Length: 369
Ligand SMILES: *Cc1c(COP(=O)(O)O)cnc(C)c1O
Image: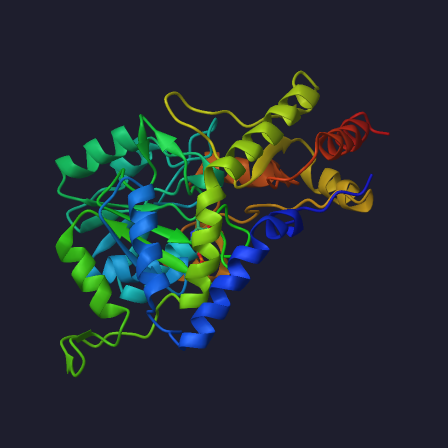
């Protein structure tokens, strides 16, 4: 059975009419930039996250960059982040001129290890960027406690975890600032690029609002050298329609994960994802660990099971970060994870038969057949 890595066509059918009516509206009024629908979506998503303010931006990467910029983080400062993440988490630190300082991961959840974060703190540390990797909230109670003892600001990289819950609080309201991506395949995805900064802090809100719109306050006065990085109104229309269904689609992802668990629990040679206490996992990705990963991955794809690796090279070992002076062995847990992980197909409308099809192929491969 052929199963694609991701298939959003059924999701699209659910919202098609609502989105096209909405886009037509925007087009007829010509309100393409910062139109009412964009402002409405900022308020809706901030409320959904149990937070206060939302600023719509053109990507998750810019959300991270503007959040750091709003804190005046720059050359001479350090920001701690997990090495096991998408490279954008580190790039945004580099854009500011600050130094990304990497931390190791927890073996069970793939998330940043709070002890490794604590060890990485110096007098120069200004912020920590926990990533809710694959859709599972990081250990935010520990991270926030450590950070606030040292006067460090907590910025959630929530690009993979829209809607996940930690100790009855929604991701996005767990630190000082949260950054989301609406890249099309994320749990809440636009019809192109998009992102958002969410915060309860009015000063950060006002600064990010300025930074995304040429640094201006009012129409003609420019307070800082800002950027042009706004969320398009038509994207907000699509995102609003999808937000109404996000909880349902996340539950469907959890059902898919439960089916995988049914099919694969106890199968020798594969380790299934673990969910920490007191939190929900929204399975942006379904990531298993196997021995002989490269061969297993190749065979899965040969059999028509779309599979990928998120991410095979920890950021501290990427060529782009060679100048940072890290070496192999610096973060043993993250490096081990990177060598064993495979992301199996995962999307809300995946059927029980598709899950069984993937599991059957994987079992066959692991048996050496
Ligand atoms: C997708 C992603 C980003 C970047 O978001 P873009 O919208 O693609 O710029 C940042 N961090 C993580 C963890 C991501 O998964």
